[in-house]
Length: 254
Image (cartoon, rainbow, N blue to C red; front, side, top):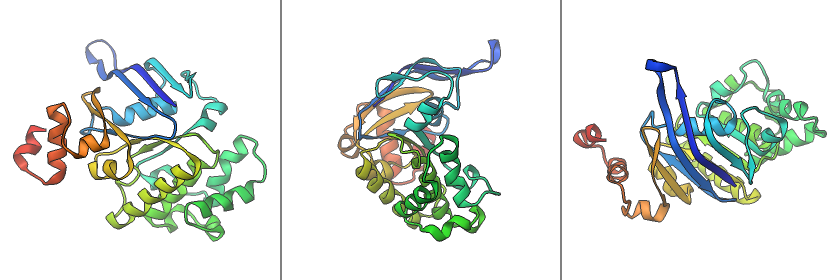
């Protein structure tokens, strides 16, 4: 469903040029939940932004369901791929009601029965029609992330890009959102590409995972192999060990 082949991205020019992604290659099957893990600055979110069309000066090949992605957004692409951002408060317009936020994509794409679709989507993410008149600041973090997920799904995309969707939430709420994402994926056979720092989230939700460091994919492995600590790369094994308990010496080594 998702193909990333030889993806390169840099910022700046000449002596100030910084290579952010170097020959990143991934293949995600239809209906798969695929994780991207690695330290901050490893390029995980940048890969998502290239797929989402937020960065356009990349080099390489990107495709969804066998159809190459260009460097410009179009309506068809937005119908196939949507993104859920890390901070639900920052990604929702503070002066728009929840109903307006969910209806806007339908208006842009000329989709009818908007009110019915908005209510149905709210119910699907565990809210109801009464939330339509509220503003983002009137919601809790978990409720705002449910709205962000609803907005991403209202165009019925086949692929969802998830940028640490639970990292800004309380621990108790994180489990609710992860379970919601799992249920939604199973109901519609969605394909997820999810960035996370939390290997517990990977173990709970993902089928396979790619480990990134300094803009490169070090290895790709299935989750049982990761959990069993049978990763091939020393860096991956360090991440697994660091996720089990905090050790200052190990943290400096990572």
